[in-house]
Length: 179
Image (cartoon, rainbow, N blue to C red):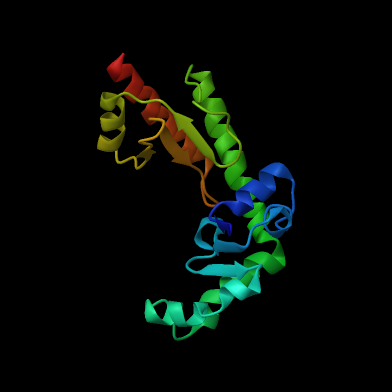
C-alpha cells in the first residue's frame, strides 16, 4: 500500500515536534507528499513531491488533463522557493503554533478547556448549537467535526494576538448567552 500525505500543515508539525521535514515524510515511509504554500504564507500553489519516482509516471499528463497546469508555473513556484530558502516557512509555522498556544491559554483563563491537547496550530473546543450560532452571527468561521463534534479554530502565519483576543471575547460572550 502506498502512502500519500496531505502536507497542508506539515510545517506546523515540523515546528511543533522539532523534527526535520525528511523525518516526517520519506524517512517514515511516505511515498507522495503534497505541500501547500498558502498555509505558510506563500500565496497560492502546491508542490507534489514523489519520493517513489515511479509513482510520478504520468502525473504531468493527469495535471494537464484536469486543468491544473498553469501557463507560468514558475510564477507560482517562486514564493514557495522564497519561503524555503529564507527559512520563513519555519518562522511562520512557529508563529501559527504560538498563536494557537496563546488561544488555548486565553480560553483556559475563562474556564474553556480544549477537547484535545493543542499540538500545533489548531485548538478544538465544544460549543453548543446556540453558542456556535452566536459565533457565526458575529462573522466567525469555523468547522465542527462530524466525527468528534468539536469546533476547530486554526491559527495561521498571519494571525495576530489582537485577533485571538477578539475571538476569545466572542467565544466568551457566546458561552455567557448560552449559560
